[in-house]
Length: 156
Image (cartoon, rainbow, N blue to C red; front, side, top):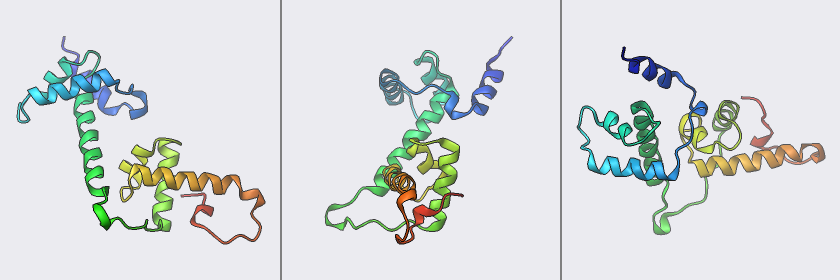
């Protein structure tokens, strides 16, 4: 009996945190498979996964989608020569989305917070915002008459 549909359903519903991270060797094999297999092949992800022991076609496809999103972020966020400008302050809405993402993905998962919660910011911007936020929270006890900050908002 073919159990692949059941496994595919499992991997579609499994939480991303439950999946194991990709090793460098897997990334290299994955990239090599992408180069050799045509984009339009109907069974492309099955063939890619066949070259990656322990990986499913669903995981291969999701890994590809994550890489495409990363490249897109790099291309959108890359400064061009002298066009680089100072950062735009975070809005209250972005900060609340950050807090939602922090609750959902945890401290340190800036890529997923950027990708799925605060889509208007890069992972580096999210990490920088988090650093300022956590410093502000740690110093909250000594803060008496300091000016207000967006980092004072602690609930989404």
